[in-house]
Length: 151
Image (cartoon, rainbow, N blue to C red; front, side, top):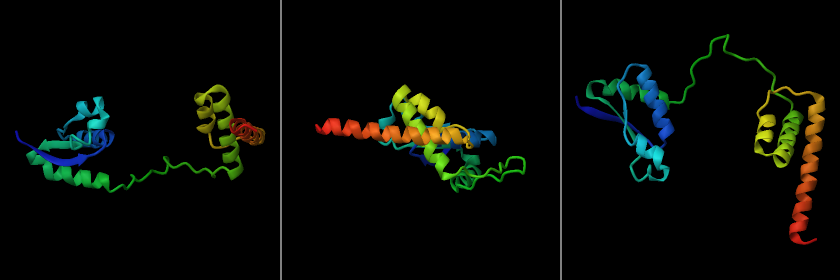
């Protein structure tokens, strides 16, 4: 069985996603340099990327599928997949960012990440707390800068 190269990707993750999509459709796919590229990321450019290979008889259909995947069109959502939410007001986003920054500086990055990635709707108390935390972080940052400058 002879193999034909159908595509080449600069990123290993992108190559693995494309290979997974092809495998889901029943194609036999080989990702060249897959293990070497995951062990030494800096060498992926020198190796020429990550080529995808399929049997010669399936090459044209696989190329068409890769072209469709690279087109970037998201799949159509069913009515039950759609989520109708109002976007949060800008004040809530700023408050969430301020609170996340404060918690990250105080307790570490994981605490800030939990607040930053939480649900979209927050209470007014949390918004006020976020604004307060943003102001405290700003004052703290200014004091650190002034101390560093020697004032």
